[in-house]
Length: 115
Image 1 (cartoon, one colour):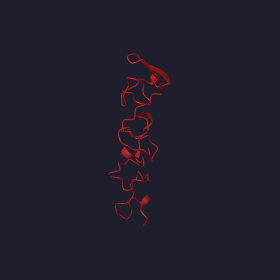
Image 2 (cartoon, one colour; image 1 turned 90 degrees about the horizontal axis):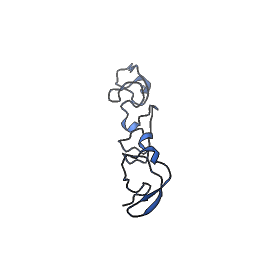
Image 3 (cartoon, helix red, strand yellow; image 1 turned 120 degrees about the horizontal axis):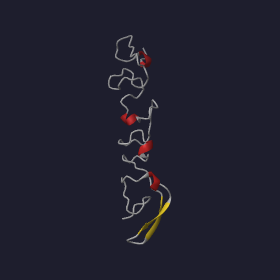
C-alpha cells in the first residue's frame, strides 16, 4: 500500500532518517513504481505538528500553546506560569508568583486575587 507523502515501503509512524526527508524520487523495485515524495516528520500524537517542534509530542494539542515559553506545551506542562511552583499547588497557576504570597488567606495568590 502506498501512503501519500511517504516513500514506498515506509509507513506512518516509522522512524525515517532525516537525510531521507528531502524531495526524492523513490522506486519500488518489485512493482517498478516511481513516486516523488517529501517524507513528513513523525507526529506521534497526530496534532499536525512534527514531534521535533511539538511542545507536547505525546498529547494531542493542535494549538501548541506555551504560556511560559519554556518549550513544553500547556497540555502537558506541570508549571504553566513558569514560577517553579507546580500547577497542582500553585495558588495562582496562570501568573508567575514564586513567593505564593496570599495576604488575605483565601488560597488565591495576591497576584491574581481581585480583593
